[in-house]
Length: 601
Image (cartoon, rainbow, N blue to C red; front, side):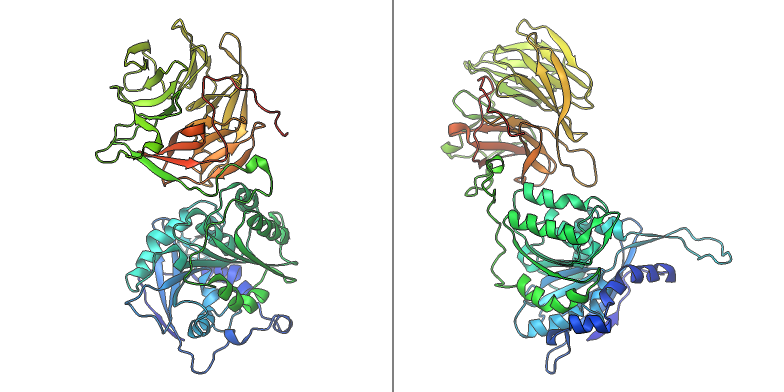
């Protein structure tokens, strides 16, 4: 193996933090006692073989902007079979230095050389990345003290559940490597691996960006509560499956510390992936928090991960295990683009004929000609529409945010101003014509009765936004994008609200306690659908998230409604586009009072 070093950024890595990184990950990778070698010997694919072409490894350094001020080493392995004319597959390794050592337990370049030569994995460029370290402010030398203070970024980067590390790879490291080599951008051509915190990091990258990585290899993964990773098994079970293939390995004597039991956590993770229908393999042993078994099985793990290449990794069909509570997504249908607006107008509503009204002015040429969509645009000259809802007579009440008013447009084209001088973000119309509407800036929920009299019925929510009635018209639901709760209120005879509770507990992204919850709708069983940054979260009557439907497109979701024939299509606004998807559930018309089944508590 030919190794050279290229410096891409001036850097002085203090002996202190180099030693710390080695202690954290290098010893785990290099654990190779005589006893380990006897129990988990390295096979022929982990040894240099005569006649096998050897790839080259080049060393670089990098100063990140996404992890500001951090510096790190990384290495790029290029197989001898690589040619610039054909895009190469890519595999990323966290704690990279330990994985490239020829005398370690992993010896990835040697294994790659052997498997590529035998056509048991594709021509793959390896990218081996160390965690970042932030050099501190230089100090005057003092006896017994280092010249620099440092911050070790490993847990912050690897154990976090957000998309920051994925962005670091996709926006910084891989584009830099692509300046020198022809890298494939197809997610089926990309894999990612790591051990311990690097193992959960590998899964997190693919989980957040399945558009970029489809193959995950995790050794002794830290699916524990170091930074919230213990949530993954439940999240995997709830979330609509993604096109991922996942290999897990762990030993029965792995860590059992303050953050959890690694052995139990990996079993729980494997069970969740299997339950959700993923292509998953879990190999177990009896070792500690080390790479003794991982190094021995690495060639077989890579063969499994890349098997049947170049066939794509399939997206699993939702597996509900016979549980009707989570049978929500129709597995035979995915999101379908319907329309695009000339500007962002987030409101949608369903009319008495089950057609969907979209408030955005249509962009030229973007209007669908398919009559089955049953979608029409709001023709009225409404200004800044943020919410709208039909009544039984075919009239539609509209929040005109820019004009600070609520207007009712009749089916014959008539126009009636219901109230002026109000800030209205969203509204819900009662069967008797009374209207609840939200005022986020004023932190208020208002009630407007049929006589046109308005009053504040709640002032205790940080930022009330979406508002919907339960199908039996007994409860009012109010979303708050700044928190993780949807509030539930009991509606009184005079329209006032009582017994308010932060009832629906939503899942949030790692980097914030805010859900970004905006639009909402309900189905005929009383389940609440909430458009959030994480996707469309579906809650049962007792207030629990039972499913998360993946977003149709990147970016924020806003308006949402059931519509179409039989009210079985879920329509959602993503940015300036309207999408629909066939569901196993059916919606309800807002003005129809419907008795709900007794929930399973």
